[in-house]
Amino acid sequence: MNMHKKRIARRGAAFVCAFGVALSAMPVHAAEVKSLEDKTSNLQSQLEGINQDLVTLSNKIAETEAEIEESNNEVYRLEASLQISRNNEEKQYETMKTRIKYMYENGSETMITMLFTADSMGDFLNKAEFIQNITDYDKEMLENMMEIRQGIETQEEDLKSQQQELTDLQSQLNTEQQNLQAKAAATSTDLATVNAQLQAAREAQAKQEEEAQKKAQEEAAKQASASTGNNTSGSSSNNNSSSKPSNSGSNNNSGSSSGSSSSNGKYNIPSGGLTPSKGRIWFNGHTETYYSQKVLPGTGLNIPGRHIASDGTIRDKDGYIVLASDDYPKGTVVETSLGAGKVYDSGSGKGNIDLYTDW
Image (cartoon, rainbow, N blue to C red):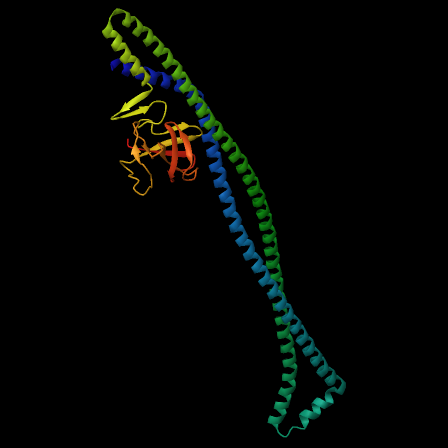
């Protein structure tokens, strides 16, 4: 039994050493993947920021366009008011000219006659005041209309100046929008490129890990075979000396035949595959993990002939290991590190297979 344990220890150490040597070049791929993941994250953040800036800028452009539209409407209104004011001013001016012309053509006799035909002093004063008021009214009305016209013209100039500022702002915002759109397109292209590189790096890393594990298993098998040959030679020389050593040697050989397995409590688990201590390994293009019925009873699963195999795996009536996988439909037979299994459940995650065990 001690010899059997020593063989297992030697084989385990050989496998660890071989696997460690095979993995020595893997940090390069891991560092490349990590670097590309960081670049992807940074580019994604940049793209999200640019898109948010574009949304903000689009809102500002829409607001500016609404202000320009409102300003245009106000300009149209002021132009209409200005035209009315000019027309009124011209009418008032023509009326005043007509009265002045009348007074000039009829001379002062009409005014004098109107004054001297007054019935009383009060009537005289009223008529004189009336004549003066006509002149003052014409003058005041003309001045008021000129002030109104000038005020409208000032408003129109200010509004047109504001309108020009809004137009310049709109042009500036449109230029910024075009620049951001070009930047977003360039960032999207960079992101797609880095994503492609990241995918290639991940595939290369997975392939290298698979090849390294396979190489480590082959190396460990060679070392185990060499160790078995040495033990067989030693056992033969013991057989020549006495019968009891021969029986002991026979037991050792029997032990070496199961030396590729490890004892885990009451179960005999083959080495080189998934074990309770190696709860996650890479095998045949996917990662493997296990879920224990001691934690997850799986009472909802319909597993005909459900039983516990000698290696501690939960199997069906046909001897298939019960599996969970998101990559294969239920009922699919998949090769695992511990043998053929059949998919009965999901929820394992992409690229991973769960083996149902009693560990």
